[in-house]
Length: 480
Image (cartoon, rainbow, N blue to C red; front, side, top):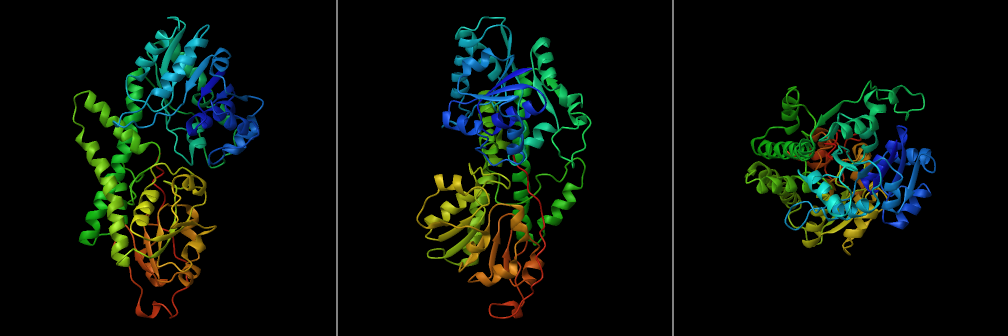
């Protein structure tokens, strides 16, 4: 099938590459000529696992690139819209990019086309998209509009696409539903998983990808409701963690007890400094705005956002409590991206905390395996120094802060870290380590939802301490 994907951001580029992987002929479109030229050279503009390999496999063959929406539309049977829908000043989703693309599509429609809204949008967007296409000259009966929300997590977007929990299709007519079923048939029939040349993910054992077919409005609502629910789960466990600290419980033990209930599950039950990224903050706010337009007070979402914001404030208080004053303090920071395995720093809790520390007069040395180039664009204070590895953040620092749960941060040489730090203080916003093990290694260790751990007197500065490795404790929330 011939497919056009308009927009080559996280969702658009991953979708285009993966559609080519399952056998379609794809044109990826973006109005940024420099980005398109880089993609044609095989350069990936985002940090995403497996994306470079699939791009190299298909570019120039089943995957082509273009800056012309009309040309791509004319050459395609199905057109996916994957442009950005940023949060507006009112909290609603800004659909101006979708509207602009609709105009370009309308000028090029010829023959029967299925237009697919894949960007995260509020309910009724497909309805408005249909009206916009008609108003801009698209002949009635020559096109249909379908919702196909994405459920791709940054850092694992390729595997999420090829091995999905579900594929949601929102169509208001049987013909467009059939077209969309054909698009995803290599996954839903299981034929892709049986191909010898399938992408070699040996750890994945898949039979068939499940598909949920609904009307358009239901599909649009599924996306916002899913992200809002996951954000609620994160805020809930963070609220429980705050109580846990006060009463002397261990939030990790609490999570183990809660998560073992099959009705609840353990995913997203990891206390920390809150959710971030390009989806959860925007989507929760946008969903609340949709509720307001429906004259419904969705107070639960308001509380989810309040708890998430408060979690960063509480972490700053934890830093102050550990260090007394912040002005003039040298702090090492591990993590800038909003989560591990991505270079995305949009709405990152780490950056929010760093900016607050800068305002209080702290000097910071920061490191992130992938997020530093993007962080430099938004965080260029003279008091922030970007260093080349984890250990340089610790050199001469009064404390070490862990703000992103990268796997490499969980296997640090803490004997070396301990020797580099001015004071043996670690303040962990991601609960990467066992408190008892950190204390044994000679650290004053503060985390989320657990009592602080302190070394024995013989492990204080200037005296020998345990050189045993410190075991990592937890995995990521794998937030969207």
